[in-house]
Length: 197
Image (cartoon, rainbow, N blue to C red):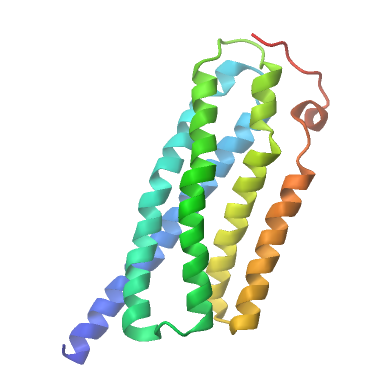
């Protein structure tokens, strides 16, 4: 393949890779905003629109992840090789995020939307409030977000193996710490538990 053609293909792949990162970051921001709005709601009817928005963003995340992954693997195969530490750590982390996002985070988001859809309008039931503010949900969400930021850091700074692993360790620690800081909704908002419908 002529060098000029290869260079053009590489830059198209780089564009798609960056576009995927921007779209994925945007979808994560929307998903996070939706969860924040759910956490602040007092009544079930306030939850419905944000539950739809959050679930819609979650459905797009796997598509955007593939838009990052496929061009990224092409660039890794053709230019960076398989022995570049920051590339290897980034790829492994991203693959884990794709699997865990589908199996853990998206499943929780879709189950939460189903629970909201099945609840009558009115004051927020204590059980539903507890699900929205659960440590499992927020710990998974925050860990996913921290790992995404870590991968973006690795792609930009391109550290050696020790730096890449340290970056990953900091992101995981931040995600776990965030789960420990999650408070029950009633305590966080200074209100009593709502009656169960």
